[in-house]
Image (cartoon, rainbow, N blue to C red; front, side, top):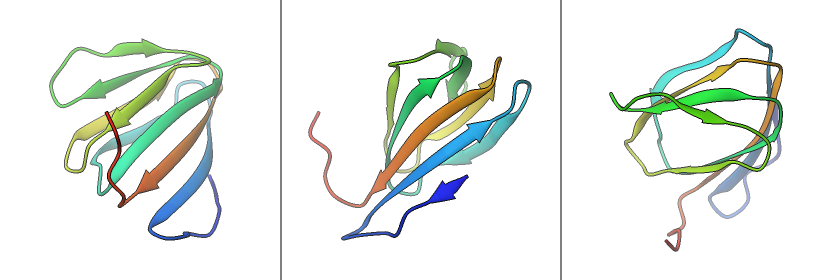
Amino acid sequence: MRFMPTVGGTSVHLARIAAGGTLGRHPAVRHQLFAVVHGHGEVQVGEEPRLPVGPGTVVLWEPGEVHQTWATTDLTVVVVKTSEEVAG
């Protein structure tokens, strides 16, 4: 995972997850936007069913939402975390 400096309560991360890998179950600490750039995988929020994700998929997790990501192929995502209010 590559990190860019946090600016004004917002940080941007580029993550690459190898096929078969996972970003383990954890709560979002801040508003978190998860955008798939390349590859395919699945995401899960709480105990809901897993949902497929692919290029162009964007997921927004609210603070406190427990979630997990699995890569079914090599997966590249951009993750933006912010303390700022996110318009719905």
